[in-house]
Length: 244
Picture 1 (cartoon, rainbow, N blue to C red):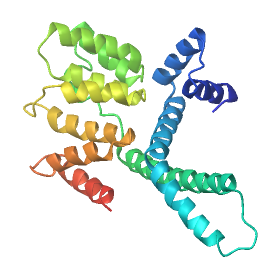
Picture 2: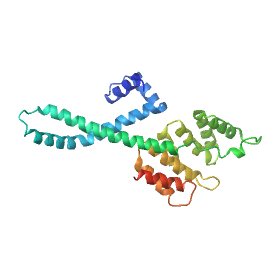
Picture 3: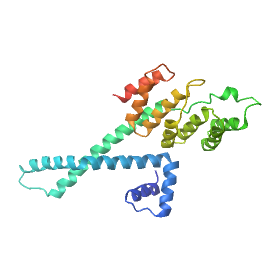
Picture 4: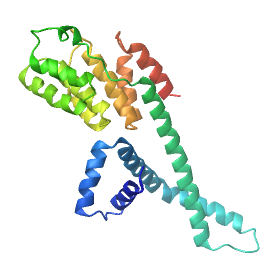
């Protein structure tokens, strides 16, 4: 990540962004996965430190001071405070990075954009509706931002299930996982013609995992293990890894 982006994040948490920088920050959060992950990391780190620092720092200081009573030369209290702070930050950072890396690995191992299962009724057909054909052409060309607009148009004009599902896929492919969660969690789908509801649950679990929300990911994976479906085995395997 560039120094400029690091400075933007630093100024964000210091509440010192200018109006122009605020605009730039919002654009980067919505379009740059590395930048968004870095912001999320900082938020989680600061939250973890805030919750634990008073309790753990107090215990660290007591421990340090007790040991210090046996020494001839006493160290200033502020120095012990600084040492305790370093220990707490270091431990919290290690735990968070390890957890994030684990979630990232599991997500990478399991995520791939869902294929165009509507394709048999699209390719080579002169009777296929123009918008449907265009939407899947854009999707297969990985022009996901453009495909979203066409899928949303189809969704407004028809009762078909596939458009909203593929909008969720597009947002995941773009790295906009919070938007994908919003779309997939609110979609009402079935497994009648295609297993869109089962796949909706699977991708929603992956999106939660990517965002670091392990508990919600596990809840959805548990749902997938409770009935026979195409993702049952993979959900079971992933759930076992998350519970280790």
